[in-house]
Length: 108
Image (tube, rainbow, N blue to C red; front, side):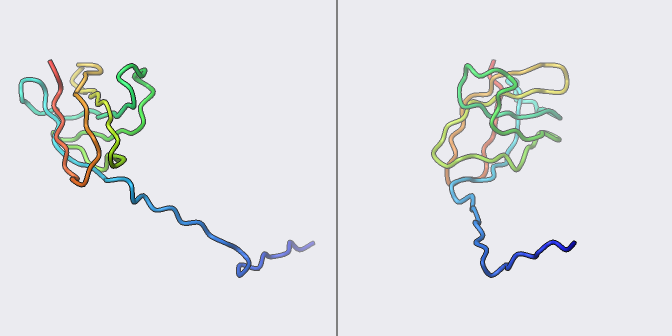
């Protein structure tokens, strides 16, 4: 029994572009201005969101993160987990815009 092949000329393909997003990168510092050597930066839609309800995240290595996807014009609450044992820490708010560099600093 053979399976009939679809005629690809009849297919329509949908290509979605992330034109409304920017891939952000930047540094991550502690409240005392020392760098976060390794950890994770998380984005949340609400400051009340559970720690596991993040929308986006990026790993931190040597005090830097990259490829954090921000929607242009949208604000996100940032929390950082420092693998040195600090747990989840608030790091303010960032808003996606035309820039692609956003430095993050943990709040006291």
